[in-house]
Length: 626
Image (cartoon, rainbow, N blue to C red):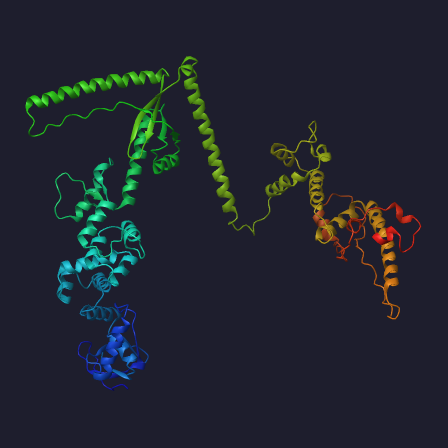
């Protein structure tokens, strides 16, 4: 039942009773899950005491129905309690945004609101632009820190958010996990929070222990890397920005492995290219047990080859670091450090000059060695035999040329592969068939060209038993004429006629072709085997007649089915397309399938010299075989 009067003011309403059948839930209710047991308990209470707190409704324009603004839980419990109506406050002229805000703020007052629902509600209110953290804190009676902490929970991956809603982890643990990006969250869930883990589960672990374990197992010390880390100082994935106090000079740990890997890969690839520009005679290499596939792939994309070696190159000398004076160093101590540094620099320059001289003389080969964490310069000694015959540099040049040739081949191979896939997706059904495409057809048809026609298509002075190669095919299609086209097409047909057998359509095409181009020969072949068949057919009929009971009426003998062949036309003078010739005169049907013969002779009919011999009795061997 429905009361007749209520006000039009949004914030001044009268409480009235609305029939439950006229009410429907809304789509903007922040509450998405309802505990069935709690609803049943509320329904029992409603049966005894009724609904104490009215629900909020707004009229649905153009209908006599209402949409729930807040109070969907009371509405659901009333349905379970089999009530007919429910007390309601009616809000006329309420916009969608106002209705959503009212629903959210009303739900935020609940004591049993789920953490993820609360976090989503806070975010939606702030993203609406009507609140900031400070004003929302006043509205819902919470601290700004509480709201910001809850809003961070919305960055949890769905699997961990579900664990929070089901109380498998605490809000404090979830707050520690949501500090990190999706990649680390995913690893933490798969390795330590997933259902059914036999060991290493973090469920039940307190928040401080979880934070310690994540930092230990899923973050990486930035000081281990040499790339430019200036952008990392302000990155939210740097653990320095997650801590209240940080020691001076501490670079922090990276909590976003994908970003760290990309920066490290880019740095090593750039360093390798820079060193190769400085030492163009050097080879890029990596040790088989210390590979960096990401950098190797990046270098390959840039056009560089990287060799995998089975032993480490000897390390090229590196420039020593200049001394840094500490506060507690005396003048004498610092002077000693400077003197040691100068001596080390002199040794470095001397050793480096000697190695470069040996490289120019072909005594050593330089290698730019790409490792997991760095790119360094190394060298290997050239065998004495190669040095004596001067083949060292020649071998290197030959190897580089071979690599260059192979790189070109790889580029062509990939181009072919991708083109073959893409060409199947292009719609060219409306495009006109070009002369070039016609030549392409003949290129493939030439695979069926018979040896006796090689000279007819322009190939002379060659081994007739050697198959055509691609160059010869290209030469033939470059000089096509009507005659050579006819030869090539007909040889193609003849090659495919080899697939003819008794029950397929090719046999009919074969007969049509034979009637056209060799009518006398075909008529003789057909007559020969039809005559053999008629003789055998007659003898089988006689045997059947002898075996038939005398008291049964004799059945009318069926006419034997024979292969019909198209009649021969007059031979053409001009060279035409065989496909057009066959289309102009339809091929007759292939012989229908007859009863399967029981002897090999019945399957393949051969001329029998004994056919003209005098016929014997029923006991004769030939008759028994027939």
